[in-house]
Image 1 (tube, rainbow, N blue to C red):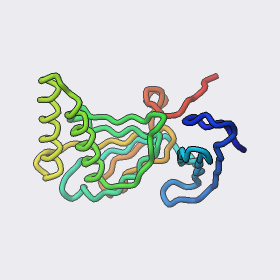
Image 2: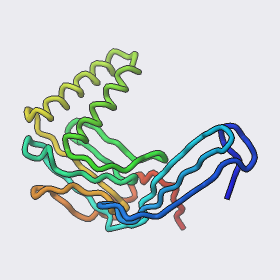
Image 3: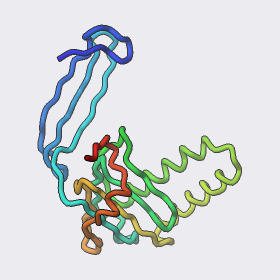
Length: 184
C-alpha cells in the first residue's frame, strides 16, 4: 500500500511495511515503518499488541533498589509523588526497559531541558531544586517512591520489595493512555 508523503506531498510515494515480533517483557508487538521513495522521509513506530490487567507498581528508591528493572510501555504514567514529577503518555510516547536509576536520569534530563527554556526566575529556581533533589535521590540521601501505572497492564517494576496492585476503575479513568480511545 502506498500513500502521499506528508513531508514532500509526492503522490503515492510513501511505502508502509509492518511486521509482528515477540519481544521479551512486551509480548507481541507490531513494528511499522513508513519511507518516502522521493524525499527519504522516514517514520517508525512500535505498538504493543498484548494487554494485561491494569496495574500500579511502586517502589521506594534506596541505594539497593536503584538497579530494579523497570519496563515502561507506551501507555504508562510514571510519577515521583514526593517531588511532584509525572510523565504521562502522549501520541509519541515510547516504551523502554531500564532500571530505577535510569528512570531518575530521564527525569533529570527532562528538567535540564526545561531549565533551558524557562525565563521565569521562580521556574528556574524550582528546576534547580528538582535537579538537586534528584541528585540526592540517586546518591541515597533522599528517599522517594517511583510509581508506574499502566491501564494496559504492559509495564512493571521487578524487585522483591515492589508494591503492586490492580488499578481501580476510577484510577484508570484518570490516566492518559497516549492512544485515541472511543467510549460507547
